[in-house]
Image (cartoon, rainbow, N blue to C red; front, side, top):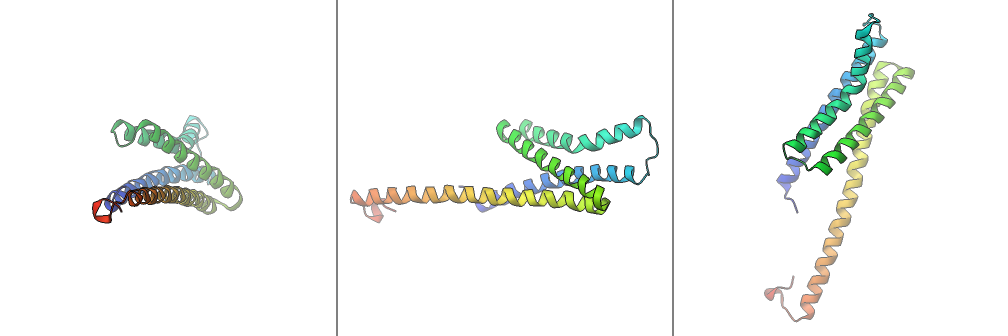
Length: 163
């Protein structure tokens, strides 16, 4: 089992990923806001490029950051793939909710909805993982109790190896 310091370092690294995702999402929302406000009046190729970049940018950032972690050996390939998929789904859901809220309530509502969806999904994942970790710990304690009972049945005292 990991010690406290290892867990703290692990969760600090996760919070950096959330920051990168939020910045990319914010840039995408900012691009949408400037286009809706009419600040980008050019209707040529630059507008189409900005629309595409604003939509693709968060997903490209996620793909690059997760792949770099795999290349640098911080994650194995399977973990990197599942983390990238979860982050992309979370970002896609946030962008969709943000776009819907922006249509109804304007830019501030859109950004608020996007960040709110991300926070909700992070909380949901955290609670789900907590329940899984708790189940594994309960199973480990049961196994230790059975092992201890078996050792006591063999006549071992606590000094001789019983727990």
